[in-house]
Image 1: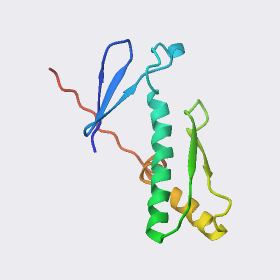
Image 2: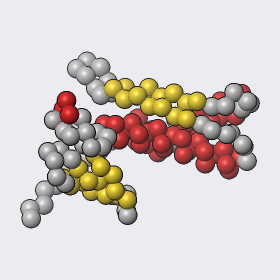
Image 3: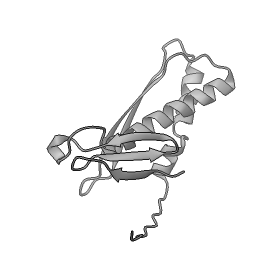
Image 4: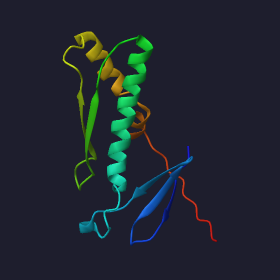
Length: 131
């Protein structure tokens, strides 16, 4: 999977390309941007929220469960000196859903690829290409 980002107008505005899709990323005005799109950190929270929801939906579909509407909210707090990065996730499930299905869906939520990447060991490899 590959994503590319390049500045497009404005001070910090970025056009992010993934396959044939594009997303605008920017910083809020109070951080020097023009607020034309979510910040990269907000996109990280959005990635976790959407990945969790999709993973749960796919699992429920495979099981033949009619789960109705599910909502996943993620609040992201970046690491501060002396404390780790913090994600607070709230999953809203229909009250009619049986308890065993709710419990299983919450187990599955923690197995989404973004969740696993964030909780696991991460390696970075950087290089510079001159143009």
